[in-house]
Image (cartoon, rainbow, N blue to C red; front, side, top):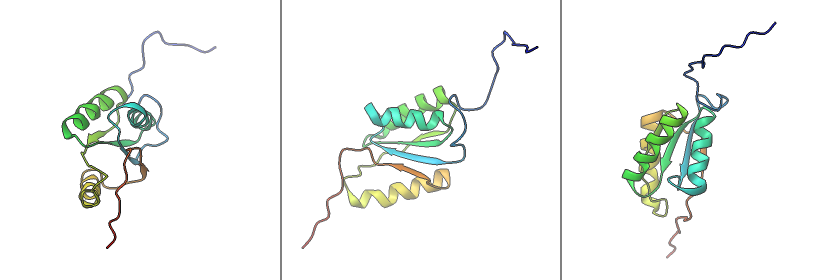
Amino acid sequence: MNVVSAEPRQSTEPTGGSHLRGKVAIVTGSTKGIGRAMVEGLAAAGASVVVSSRKQELCDEVAAEVAATTGSVAIGVACHVGEWDAVPGFVAEVVERLGRIDVLVNNAGINPARVTP
């Protein structure tokens, strides 16, 4: 006979599972729309996530909401990925704060253009 408890189970696991536990995922353009849905899904699957767009305040706000709803680590790091010179510092900050990068979702609607002489 199976016994089902009427009390909700308290868990420290992310809400959607843990198959991405220990992985770090960056989603560019992730403060709204499809990017936000992707960052929420990755966090729900257990990944630590980086919420990124051009405005730090909005990145921080969304990261706090994602962390609160999923139980996963979520940080906000602003970066304008359309500017080549901004990308190395962005990557360095993510690695410094989370130790690694395993997943990159290039969702931002802009790509850096190489300038040729």
